[in-house]
Each structure stands twice: as structure tokens, then as C-alpha cells.
Image (cartoon, rainbow, N blue to C red; front, side):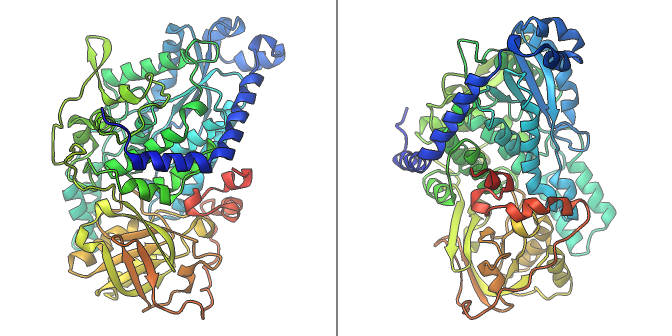
Length: 603
């Protein structure tokens, strides 16, 4: 067993120091809330009657305060394939809670939008702020003061961060995340990408594209590429907030059901009145947040977490920024290649050893904090194993060596020596660059820029042949305050086509691209954003722009000081976007998490 890497220790110590006051305030908050947690025997009979009226099978146990009462906060809906299996969970969990001498109630539901459905459409502008809405919904669910623990049912992009942010404000309660698992693998990712690019070039019909997409996204479960949803599941393992190894077990299988049953039993055993009290706010500390960052880097996870992690950390009184991420990236080796960074998907990854292999290897190499409080063990060690069934009994075993060294390798022989998440800085602002997804010869792009205000403008220019050259495509006014910072998925196929034609191409934007962004070099999340006079608002067509992951540059030699900011597009209405105007007005920068709610709360 190796000692912790000194750079990880240094970055963690820096985070602890800059979080000293905010973390102290947070811990004081959850200590006060724990003291104020009502004994239900002391709550007025009218209040209790309201709370128990609908719980017909558990009324006697609830009236007698027999055992803990567990809150189920669910993001179930039928439209989101990853969350469709959740429809059966509450009824099952109530039975399993009774087995453990507890009761369970659905405390509330949260929105769960699918970026795969809204991408490229106006609804995507609600996406990032749905995280704030989910956090608020979670707070409403837990505000009834009737609960001794929280089971959080969510998987996808903004949903896990939103649930965690909301639950952390009730950090005196124990909490556990319960996933449902990925759908079976469909057509190969290479074939899917090929058809998308053919369609972008007009060489495949819409019917052919739909057939290809339907062969990829075809049944209940999480999408199988390693985007934000599956990066969420990785982080919950790295932070010790799942039952160990729960992340990528398929839905509707005996093992998945056994893990969900075990999670319900475990939550009942962690309450304030037990000998094993594990409040969420104590589990999510500076070391757990660093572990989440390390997991993101080691596995080549979604760039969206460069936004979500600072927001999650703030909710627990922990302050992190992109410098912390970049410094960790310099020493965390890339040990996974999962599509879009490799050919295999998360099912192949799980079969090759999955998160049990990754965590075991990181811990043995001194590349993660072992000594964190988890829901599944005394420290993170239990998460370096993989679950299985021995008859009807849930067991855990060592995952053994990598089952596929094209997608999973040890830290001693990684795919690349660093984590591939780089900080770019310069006179155009600060940005993130996912170098693990980009071939090294494309880490530096220097070319005249072409400036756009929407991704639709980019696509039209591509169709007209105006981008058939070396070019840095700048898409601005896409930040949190401008339009809610949508993901710009529509840009990936045309920019990929230009790159395949032999042109030197890069993207610079104050918007998002997520874990599905792929092979085109991109400086994303540029902050300060263009709205309000950020440097991107000063660029003009033809200005030379340099994007370099090697040296960490995002710069232009154009004289920006002599210019006035470009006029932003009008604030859009429709699809409910006007209802989110207050979120846009209050949102802070991408490096702080792009949250209106946290900014207004002074966190």
C-alpha cells in the first residue's frame, strides 16, 4: 500500500485551508439541524396525522415511532430511459425498509430532463438551471422534518448534482444514492459516429440516422457512452455514496435488486439513533470532493463536472476551482478509455473490472484518499471490490486484473500520464480543455477565428462551405447568464467532418459540450462569459486565436482594448425560458458552478 501522492496531499491541504471558514459554517449548520431534528413523539398530532394519512400499511409503525422513517426522493419519469426503472423502486423499498425495522415514504419528486432529447433545441437552455430546480425540489421534499435518512434516486446529468446539493443542506441526515444501471450495449459507437457524420454531410437520410440512433438508445437504462450520467455514477463510487460497485450493474437483474435492497437496509442502519450514524455532511468533506475530482481525471469523465463539482462542493462548505482540477490532472494518470475516449462502452468497462478495479488500483498507488467516511464501509477500501451473488446472498470480491487492456489499465502503465483535464488561461479568459479525448497533434490550434452567436449559425456556415479551412470557431453568448449555458452537441458532427477533411479546427465557447464532445479540440466554459463584456465579446471574424493544451493558452494577438463588446442576442422566450430569467440574472460564473441558487444563498 503506497502513501498518498504528495501533490494530492498538497492540493487537498490547499482546499482545506481556503475552505476553512465556509466548511466551519457548514458543519455548524448541520450540527444545529441535528440538535433541532424533532422527536416525532413530540410533534403535534395534527402534523403527524397529515404525514401518516397516506401511509396505510405503515401507519401503526409510524404512530408508534418504531424505527427510522426513510425519505425517498425520486427523479423517476418514463421519458428518461435511465430513470424509467425507478417506477418500481418505492414499492419495493417500502417492503425492504420493513425488513430492517424501518418505514419509507416517497418524500418528493424532482424534474429529470434528458439532454439527449433537448440537445439542439430551445429546451436545452433550461438544462443547467434544472440542477438548481432539482436541488430546490430536494429541499422541499426533506423540509417536512419527518425523516431519519434520504434515499436519492437519480442518475443523469444535472440530476445527481442537484439531488446532492439539495440533500447536503440537510447534511445531518444520512443519505445514499441508488442507481438503476446502464441499458444493454447497442450498435458499436464507431458505427453510430459514422452515421452521424454522414448525415451532417448530407450522405445519409434522416430515416437512416433515426435507425442508427434507435439501435444505440433502445431500452430502459442509462445511455452506455461515458458522458455526464455515467461520470455521475463514477463519482458516487469515488465519494462512497453508493453501495460498493452499484454504479454499472444492469437494471432489472437479481444483482441490481439485491444492491437496492442492501442500500435500503444500510440507510436504515445509519440513522442518528443508531451506533453507526453517518450524516451526509460528514461523508462529503474535502477529501471526498478531491476523490471525485481524481475519479473524473483517471477515467476521462465528462467536462460538465468542471461546473458541477464546484457547485456540489460549495453546498458542503468546500471551495474548489479549476486550478485544483488542473493540478490534480498533472499527476493523475488516465487509466480508462471508454467511448467517446475509446471504443468500448460502460458495459464493456464494467465487465473488464469497472469501478472496483479503478478504485483498488488508485488506492494501492496512493492516488486517492482511502480515509473517507462512506456509506458502505469504514473507508473507501470496500469500493475496490465488485459485487456478486452467492445464491441469494450479496457478496463482494476482488475484481482481479484488467479484463481488457484496451480500455482499462493500471496506473503503472496508463494510457497517458496525466488526467487530461487542462486549464487554459490568457487574454480570452479561463477555460477547460479535455485533452484525453483529443489526439496530441491537435492539442495546439492557431488560426483565424470565425465568430458566431448560436450553434445554428455554425451549421449554416458549414453547409455553405464557409468553414472549409483552418479555423477556430467561436460560439459566444452561451454562458449561464446569457442563455443558461446549453450543451452545444450539434457542433460535434460538422466540426468532426472539417477535421476529417484535414483542416486544423478548434472550438472556443462559453457554453458546454459535456462528456459526449469527442475528438475536436475545444476550449469550453470560457469565463468570464461574453455577456457583460467578457473577452469573447470583443473578438471579430479573422482575429488570430491560439488554443494550446500543452502550454495552457487561450489567447489572441488582436488589440481587444480598443473595442466595444458585441451586442448580445435578445433574451429568448418560449419553452418556459422566460420563467428562468431570475436564474440567468443571478447566476455566477462557470468556475464557481454556474448556479443562481448558490449565489443568492451566499454559499
